[in-house]
Length: 227
Image 1 (cartoon, rainbow, N blue to C red):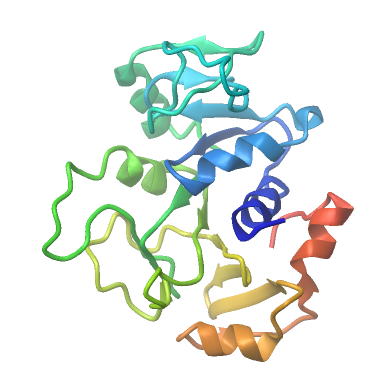
Image 2 (cartoon, rainbow, N blue to C red; image 1 turned 90 degrees about the vertical axis):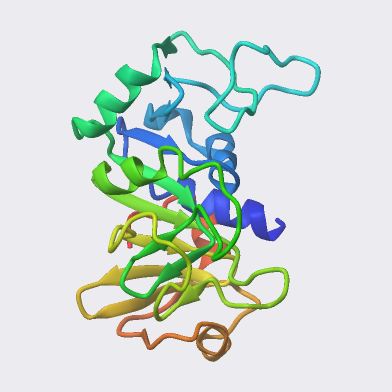
């Protein structure tokens, strides 16, 4: 598994049977490829699709079936389509169990900054603010650092916020972190990274108050549960 697949596979194991799950743009869209069909998770996209399937094989894309990021998706017997006003009514009505979102930064207290760099141009934050604010649980997926090596889990976000104190769980290629009232807790680590290496790469105080599992072992077992 490469880093992106490890993150997506681990995130898929956090989902509960039968819940409605919104997958954000980017890395979160990979999660749909690894969800156990027996869970009967309902995948939701803010552009107006519920019950969508995974990404289709190359050459079998339907230009009329896309997610909020413009990427192709597949229909299932349960697929429903509707306009964006209905989609956001569902979000604001508290119908989402989990939102799986990408980010540029996430703080130790769960603040999410996912839409604009300081001084940079952005067309807007899209539905990220609504998803982060209204889902019953928010799982953030991100690489541990930027391409220039700057940590993406930080004590305090320096980029414009999408939502404050919204993230519940953070999954990177280095480990799985839970945002708790006491602080950021390390629950799992990647096989190639020791707890001390995860600490060194994460400029926040990390709580390690229980045995730290290995992410790859959890993925291999196929039953991760919720940190």
